[in-house]
Amino acid sequence: MCPDDTKRHAREALYASAALIALLGLLKQFAAGELAQKIGFTIAAAFQLYLPLWLLSRHGQRARDYGLHMHGSVGAPLALLRRRCLVAARGRERGRPGRRALLKLSYLLAPYAHRARFEPTTFWHDLRQTGLLIAVTFPPFAVGHHFWQLWLAHHAHRHAHYAFHLPADLTELLLINLLLVALPEELFYRGFVQTRLLAAWPPWLTRFGVPVGWAILVSSALFALGHYAGEWGNPARLGPFFPALLFAAMRARSGSIMGAVIYHGLSNVFSETLRSGYTFS
Image (tube, rainbow, N blue to C red; front, side, top):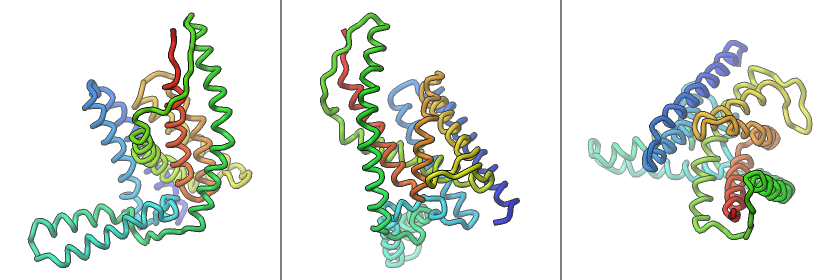
């Protein structure tokens, strides 16, 4: 790829990020009720899932080069579904509504499923590395979270009580945070934006397989701005900048967004599980 194309693609990623931040801010203005919030959430997730893949397909680029292959764990089943849609469409008569729907679905799946195959060796290696990181980081986070809750209670002149219990909607929490939160965000920010910015802005240095430079900082800042615009609209929601640096390192070291997706989603669920155990009096 020539330098002009690299810079143009980086600008495209920045424009897409700006459009997402504007969309999140706009959706927040209309999220007055629970239904409106769910619709807005779905629109934002769809934007992050499909736009990058459509842009890659438009430029003839491979999802694998952006770490979106996830070792085939998602792409391979979608590739199988796409092949079956095409076979079923060919078996139907021309002009029938069912045939048209099958062809449309196969077209929508194409960016996700193109030449996807399951890669067990790299899949399990990435999974083990993610599990190790969880084992190392979750316990100190739980301790820090507990003292943070005590500090909040103290300054509110209240007493904090903690009793561990799993949320009643744990399965729903896992599905939402892995598939509708972590997957869209990691695909968009770490897969698409980070990769394009790294190509245009080479890192200052690389340590332990992690590039350090403007690309990582800017993509992490855009991630934080997206949370600020789309969730609470207060400066505290810029905090995701710091975990974004860790997600960026995971994506860079493994060459895939899979580990970042799993760690991101489980971190959200773990945090919510801890928070739900506190009562204040």
